Amino acid sequence: MSKRILVTGGAGFLGSHLCERLLAAGNDVLCVDNYFTGAKQNLAACLDNPRFELMRHDVTFPLYVEVDEIYNLACPASPIHYQHDPVQTTKTSVHGAINMLGLAKRTRAKIFQASTSEVYGDPTVHPQVESYRGNVNPLGPRACYDEGKRCAETLFFDYWRQHKLRIKVARIFNTYGPRMHPNDGRVVSNFIVQALKGEDITIYGDGMQTRAFCYVDDLIEGWLRLMDHTPDDFTGPVNLGNPVEMPIRHLAEKVIELVGGKSKLVIARPLPIDDPLQRCPDITLARDKLKWEPKVNLDQGLDRTIAYFDGLLRANQDVGRM
Ligand code: NAD
Ligand code: UDP
Ligand code: UDP
Image 1: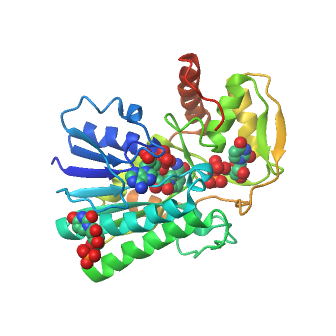
Image 2: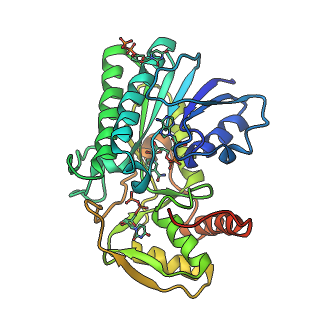
């Protein structure tokens, strides 16, 4: 049955893929975004669809609309973006969550929160399970994001207990794919753009810190399964990510191999403050409850992402560094 679905942050990387999937399933989609890191052109495939509506709006301000479901994604996600205006980052996560939860309470909409593996901070439990409470530095430069997202989770669970809202909380691990922002400093976009331009690949620290990379289509499938999972009492939090962990150095070598250029690895700077040394999701819960696991392997996902950035470069768009 067709639903009216609100997607906050829908003009961003993940949000634009979600809007496409929701429209393809026959839903009405209302996307709200303040275009801080998102762009209308990410939604090129949606704009002509009569079931799609786009509104410029900042979620730190109240929003009165009538919807059946809400996906709350609004928040800059890459370290250089969320550290650009850290106070606004916390406001977006916290005030944004309050407003969207207030909207869900009034409309009785089911509401999804895009939480993050960053709630685990620099983890001392590995791989990370949902019951692990994390190791976040509340004072450091990443705290505006990490603590903002932790507070948003708290709000979700308080509205669930206090107001009986139907909530769905996903803890998302590093995700990549077409429409990542070319200048957002994230490792996958940086390495691909550098390799395509034949520039040095910038490793931070010794490159032995680990991450696990999920292709965007796999992630969105997990979100839809979580939102549609019945009974509604499965709230999460549930980890969604690809459990294939690798050192950043390995990712760099793989990108060079697939792009086929002459780029060299260079240690460009020390490891940033509070940069987690290791990160990998335990997805047992998602496998059990949602029957979900990633299907796209790293080579396939990188190939598609490289093709996207190659297209951007060929179109002579600005993919310089910020
Ligand atoms: P993104 O930066 O591409 O998208 C975020 C969107 O939110 C942008 O379109 C931006 O303009 C919008 N936005 C920011 N502040 C806003 C505000 N105050 N009001 C309205 N819109 C606002 O990032 P993304 O990678 O698509 O991430 C989407 C969500 O998923 C974020 O909540 C992020 O924290 C979460 N997440 C992403 C990853 C990942 O690997 N990409 C990992 C963990 C969690
Ligand atoms: N809110 C909103 N849209 C709505 C309903 C509420 O943006 O349709 C916002 C409103 O700004 C409010 C917040 O959500 O402050 C929290 O709402 P709630 O009903 O929980 O609390 P209250 O209205 O008592 O502050
Ligand atoms: N990183 C790197 N070179 C880059 C960009 C990032 O070595 O050009 C490292 C970064 O220090 C971190 C990892 O890659 O250890 C992932 O960084 P990203 O910002 O993509 O995600 P997050 O740190 O939020 O997981």
